[in-house]
Length: 237
Length: 250
Image 1 (cartoon, helix red, strand yellow):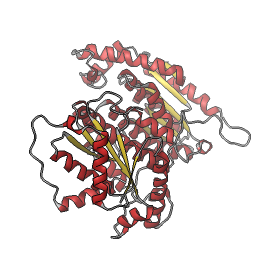
Image 2: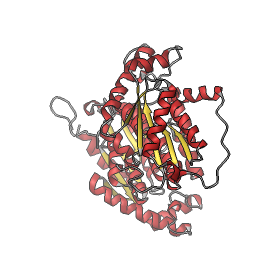
Image 3: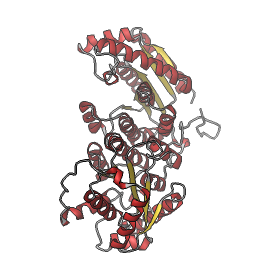
């Protein structure tokens, strides 16, 4: 989306944004893939990177808990399960902001395609399910840049259980929402938690308008759909 | 935002704010010693001291990796950790909690670093207001002299070098502190800071400080039922560290 002067329009931060960063300088594309563990996010991103790079686009990948600043500490905190909710939330926001400031924004300035393996929506959905205040969260993530496209890979909770179990024969503590005490049974807790997460995503979808992709389908057909949508996005230039 | 008293907490929170070199850390330490001697349930919490977040903060500072946004968020994380794990339970248990710096430090510093004030305030909106906030107000030159007298090696963020105000750390520190002071002054009425003239000598300030605290808080309500033995005084070398610790928080 460029006007005749070549200045990007429509690019915006959700809220106050980042001090001293001008949207007009951000020439690249930010593409987000959201979805639960087992929704096929990483597989799809790997395929998109292959395709984009073969077609001559430079790409950069970011994701949750990948910042230089706090990823190690965040991992430790999760292991010990000793942080309270607001603290966790802010810690994750720090991890996100570090990647936004130091990877996403510079890469966009340089005209790269940034692929984000989850973005603020997962973080917000997790917090919403845990009863955090929505207004508080919106202010917090007012630093985030609105992506050019967000694909939410939606998979039925029952199918997610099957995929997670066939992959690692166990369910992850956090992805099962065990900290919420929904059920002492991990299987039950997983299904309840993922159902609640989908509810939170549907709610967020109304505000943030991302594309819901039916990811109960085979890998290949999902890739096809994603490529088609991204191709259209790149053709807008 | 309401105070802990307004929220019917049995405990009370007293915060001190001011520039580095305003002497607030010394004053709150002496207040703590007095309250302990009076047999009062008291807890002291320092800015930027949560064990968990500390390693990330010091890494970020050492590598000069922090941006205004991550600087702000990592300090908010530290605050939230102390708030949820220590301050809230202690205030529920009827403690007098003493805080060397509170959210106002972030309001002042992060705003000077260019973060939008409404955003920073929103971050800290989960926290109640202190029951009393003392602003140790010095003339800029007085606090600068106290800090800079020994020509200490100023750290990058402490001197506000990330703001590119000057290539000279001392000059940068001066400008940075001046701007923070302006922010404190601007917040004074809004948050009903009790202003203490921190140009006065230590003893005079402490007499006034104790008087103001006992006027505003009915201290005898916060006595321990069974008195604890008095903790030992902090040795001189440890005290130096404490002041350095405060400097490092900048």
